[in-house]
Image 1: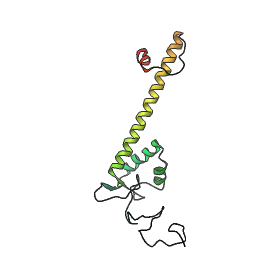
Image 2 (image 1 turned 90 degrees about the vertical axis):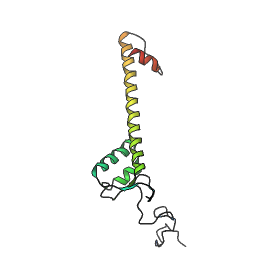
Image 3 (image 1 turned 120 degrees about the vertical axis):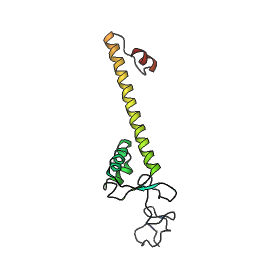
Image 4 (image 1 turned 60 degrees about the vertical axis):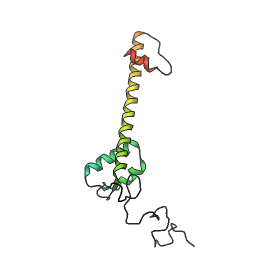
Length: 143
């Protein structure tokens, strides 16, 4: 007896439950969202990639977020060539997460530069260097 996904049986029905293939929830012809891997529906805004502009923006986001699954999916070609589909909400969420990550990264760099400025100004004034965390209030008052 062979299991549905062991490679020895032929795939004959879309109702079989396979890890690599279609499940009972959707057929083989139904497209999946490239971001969330869920099928598109008539009630959900589901789009086909049609411009290179969207490809460039979508490629930048998983690189920022280190999303290896999405990077792997996009590595086979641009979104138009691989006939990629996406939910509008998934795309908006991807952009939002990427922007939030970039904003937090910039904030951390700004905080580090303020700490370095604080330590350098104290060193020049001959004050002892603080060890440990520097309170934000003292950073603000010194700048």
